Image (cartoon, rainbow over all chains, first blue to last red; front, side):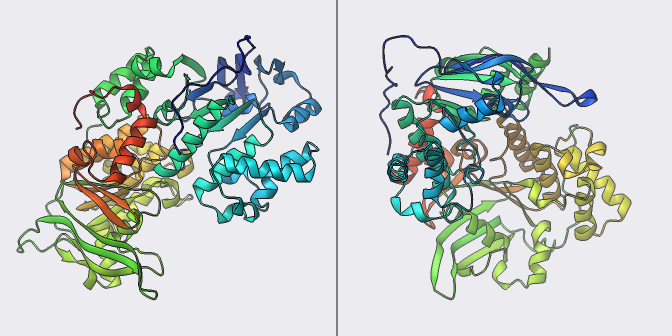
Length: 288
Length: 295
């Protein structure tokens, strides 16, 4: 079940542009008195085959950023390049075509949102392929292959999502995101709703995907759940990326007070979280 | 801001009479079996632990390990068709097997209370949260409207909610998850129970909010002698809060003992697996192996 600890290997030595590049993105939502800046000049890149953890708590703007990358939320400034193509300037038709090609895929925290409750697992997995015009036999064969990649049995193909456990459903959602062989998969809190055993299983699947060269943007409020798989970590706080670095650097030597607060709030098996006074001091440095 | 809860001099319903010797344990579970009596199949088999006043026991294990059924048996709220099929549960020295439904209702809230993962689903969305806390005081303690309001404001302050008067009048949708969980904890400790069961109570919260709730639980324990049962999938939360831990798998306790031993030097293969996985995917991975002692 566990994968090797080896880092991913670059597919070629020729430098290629990042598969995903978020450049100085600004998003403002609402109007009048309710106007609020959700993202304030966010920049972020995900290289081919790289896993980037995007950490942000409630209200940080992380879900808005994910929606912006998918072209679901309009930007008021900056751009998002997927495979070198600016997705923020696409018309409706071009955006739909891009979505149909399945270059960027998305996995939600609640797998019931990623899966149509009225479609069997087999139908859910083949639907995006059939939309692309892949013949039925081949779509079915690919669905089966990707079900295997998330370590699920082919017997599940005829079941409805409601008949699966939470962990199985999340693995189906990952398989569905993979069938179109995307360049980058955005995972929004993919393990937050899962118990320890299922969580480890999904995380180890993510490590296998990484080893296979698929780029992942792993969005979570919890640094601890991302640390095991991410190559780099970006910390989002009130609509701004306050820190980016390798996972090891961010975890062992955080430079921004907010990152320090996140790390000092999380207990580990070896250390308790910081006491209230220390956390208050870090908060004070944040607002200073 | 630093209001703390103190136990009132009056004994509330469900507490033992003052002339009886004080029970040694807030909660005592002996060889508990839970199952479906019609099939004779037990889901929980042989869980035993003692929780002293002010003690904290953690329960870890995956979904289906029986930890939630164990909690529900202790609270007397087992879902159909399950029932306690063997063993005993004593709450402050009182064997719960003999309780009538009315006595159970008296015991719950006043002597033993619980908070769960999803606070919003335990509050009425169309009633201000403060009034819902006051309602508990009116029903359980028979307080008058004004007294219940004052006490509920104190409770909201005690769970470190800023501006309690404002929060009192707000509806659940106006509050964040962390604030709702504080309100639920305020309601749960309103009648000064002896035992609080926290079943994945911080799982859905941001890590900085989780730290606040963990502090709050530790403070309640210190200031009121509240005994805690902490159910969590997060070994680190259990390591921080608990002194004892039960590791459950397939309805049985595979390992049990002081946190410092079970999580630091696990003996059972399953506990070893849990600890190894936690360290492989968690922050511990980067913190070196000589990171010091467990608390």
